[in-house]
Length: 212
Image (cartoon, rainbow, N blue to C red; front, side, top):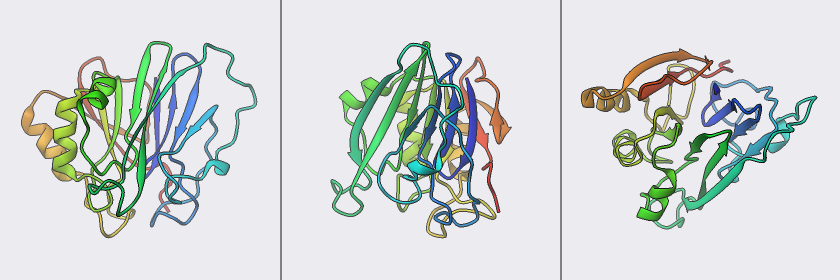
């Protein structure tokens, strides 16, 4: 499995089956510090309708279509806040399984998970989770959720860096510290592109592909 961090909450995942999936493409100009992207993927999934997560039209289809087995897609309906959607609306968690690999994109999750939802996510190969707070769960909440889900690999997203991201949200530093304290994950600095997931449980740190 290849992982490309386009930026913010947008990822391009290339499964070993040959299927490519884009999650939460952002509209040009919607995320401070991030440039327009040029993503090519067979499938596109968006967690909600905000511009920084929902630019379906910006993702181009590959020249050659995917001809493998159909992926298994599971959508979990959650909320963008901790008040049943009253503040920011709904959010979708997207689970995609292809060729024996399972990835989970948490979208802009702003609430906790019930036992049924946890059971459907637990033990995934890759978890993409927001950590910046304010609009989503924060670093501490994300860490607790990771402990519950116990993914093979986890990538923090929706955080503020030195030259990108919303002023209201935090960086990922506290999240990294909390996982480091637990001592049960290898820290992998992958840059913008990860060619394959590590064999052991890992925290994958990635940098946006499209910084202005």
